[in-house]
Image (cartoon, rainbow, N blue to C red; front, side):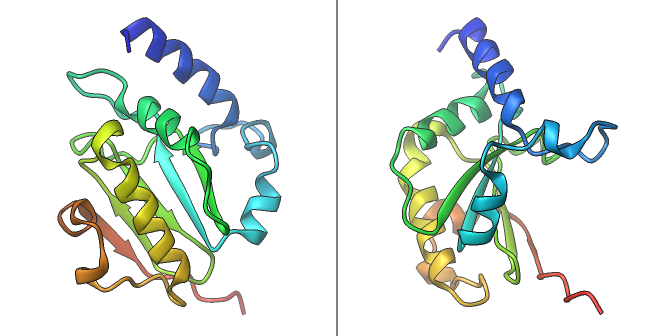
Length: 156
């Protein structure tokens, strides 16, 4: 993919991004179409940083495009996000779901890791709390974990 093609894809993706908290824009203007439906029915959401880049180009946009071409598993949603601020570990994705631990994983590539990301999302979706035993994670999800964040406590 040329740099220009990646830039054009990134420009199109910006229309469907989850809002960056530093933006002073209305959240709905950045929401993915059908976002509310995904949020209530998905057991797992794969969040892909589409601004991730390296010497190889716009890896994040390419990873999101590669994942978009695959039919999603039941209960797994895919979303583009603008930035995870983990620029030294491109590509970065997160697995998240309400009431579950959230995993942020870096050092992923579009071609070799799509199957690993989908396998990790399936295992994450099947777990009641989002905790997937280390031995059951695909290799990139064993080596590339940047953070594991506990679920937020319910509002009082």
